[in-house]
Image (tube, rainbow, N blue to C red; front, side, top):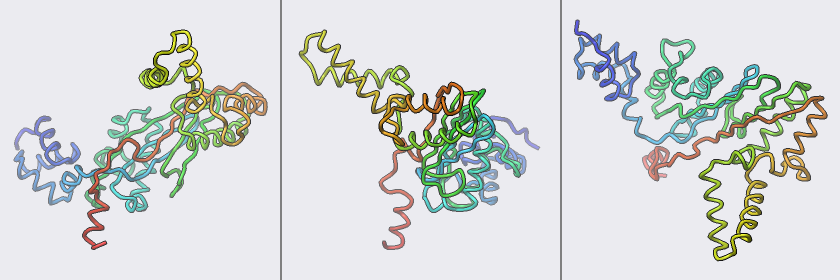
Length: 306
């Protein structure tokens, strides 16, 4: 039997897009013959995934899972919304969401975790599903939040199955106060975040490049003003920016007469202890993915003459 090296497995994986364990098995079954190994994988229906891997997957689902003091989000993409409504796809996303709680916001770690009820890692299981269902699929990203004391508030928008939809939000509320009161507020705050899509918690936590861009726009609009006047204009402009884009400064969507910071102060009184908002994650399906003009759905429409 030929000696199967890690390099051979890597080459076969790059050529076919199939998981490492399956590539190793293929090489072992074909005595290290690369072309024969490709054919072996094709015969098993696995190498089909390679052809589909170049197609844009911008649909799918955002899965959400809260377990104890940790909440996690994961985006699993497919090419069409039709597949997102497939029960097998939804079952896969549900299992991946559970694993995401333990992945610590590390997508690569999540992909290497064992998929329950199979002999594969998550990435390899997804590759099998590509071959089975017939569309490109990817585990795009994951994120998690944990509290030492308190609750993880959560909300799924456009939910099509429990814990799965188009937008998922988790929010971390640190507090020793009443858990029931905190959970109710946490869900309401997560709904607020889904609606307003804040950039950050506060102006201080806005990414430096975003803040620099805002300052540059204000300075360009007011070019020629004296330095002392410009300073006041920029300060006022950033304050307005914070009210629109920074969570704590935003008007609370459930009661526009108060800010989110003020709503936090009120829930602290109800819960019986101080409440600190330590973080949030809003994950929207397909954001940042550039879709092809001629995507898979369009191909199907053309073929059907629509």
